[in-house]
Length: 131
Image (tube, rainbow, N blue to C red; front, side):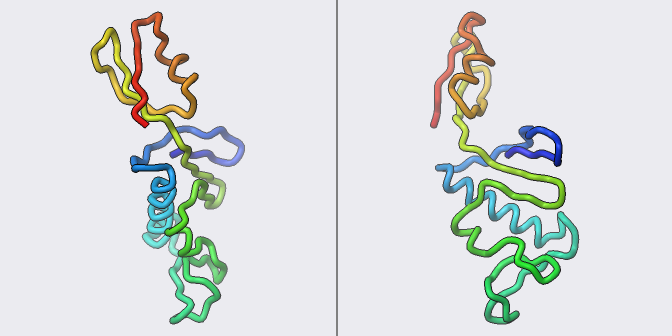
């Protein structure tokens, strides 16, 4: 998961582990949806239903406007915006890093080239891509 404030660059703030990127998108949607309902971003977000609240679509509403549809829970999301913040998830490569043949750490990268730059073979590193 990456976060940025308006005018700034994205920075890594966390990870979602899942069997696929599509599942990660669904998990990310659930996290954001629940954070809205639990007041993480203020108390103005409420869940409304087509059946009981006479709205066009089930979801989380902010001041009477649909903010996040319930369908996002089934389809998943990659980006979430609230106020001046933007969060996103990216499909990353999971890698096990070895130093001189011994397990060193597990890490995540967007591109394989990034692995080589951070863990050069000249320094004794090798890696194994897990997904």
